Amino acid sequence: MKTVFVLNGPNLNLLGTREPAVYGAQTLADVQQLCAQACARHGLALRFHQSNHEGALLDWLHEAGGLHAGGQLAGVVLNAGAYTHTSVALLDAIKGTGVPLIELHISNVHARESFRHHSYISPVARAVVCGLGVAGYGLAIDAIAQW
Ligand code: DQA
Image (cartoon, rainbow, N blue to C red; front, top):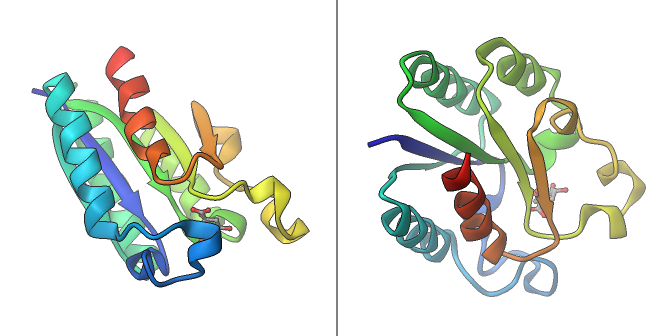
């Protein structure tokens, strides 16, 4: 059974109470449940994580890279939050591990402030899902299941 990593960056632990007009009312626990259901539908195992620390995201990407090297990784869904717009380290980790990855944003970052329009991750992502709300997580897993 191959594994999907769903990685969430800073402030996503606040889902449900954080700017609900932008991010909706569902919590991170709801998102985890949605991801578990999507993985179960496709016979995939799920690793679901959130951290406010950039290094933790790097460590999980490296771990996913190890599974990828062993042919056991289905793919990675990464919502790096604000690190999307700042982190060369995430770009290097994705490049360095070669993990097949979907960049995800709950909101439509292109309809928001201009500093959210640039992503360090997009050039090394297989695809970008953005603006579909938390439903995007399930759709990203559906896409990974087709790879
Ligand atoms: C986000 C968009 C980012 O710009 C923001 O910093 C987030 C969440 C999203 O899911 O829409 O924390 O990645």
